[in-house]
Image (tube, rainbow, N blue to C red):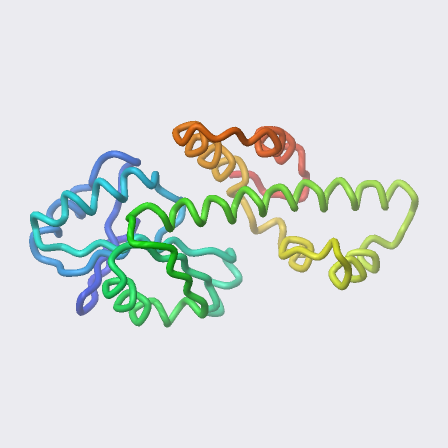
Length: 211
């Protein structure tokens, strides 16, 4: 993550899911509101731990990952999930308005927003795999796939990835996202049999630019 000074905001750099970067550690003693809104996602357990550690420094932490990919970042229309103290999240929303258009509060427990984003991601990549396989079938029958794609977005098959299929090459996070989802599920004791298949199948989707 970046460390960007603002009147009451710092976005701290994280080396991994368990350790604070030097910038974060040195800033804890002097800043007031920390917003964790960076991609790639970090472990929800880490955000919870960060909040507990920050309390002793009188730091308020808000978990606020964003969704909707690069194009939305450029137009200021990202969606943010937020978790943490409600008042702190409300304050964070005002700071995030320059680059987010939609905000959804998902609870007071730090890390909950990361889980919400993970749910978003695992559903996203399942639809990407389904879109790819469906359009491959259409191609084998020599259908006009672009015309079909437009028609499908007005039908029961509509999904965000299908509506933005022309930008699918800008989505490089599939493997990382699915690995995070399966790791969180394992820690929670939740079985995700479809997602386990998607984690393997998404690697074969040729229109994606895998990171």
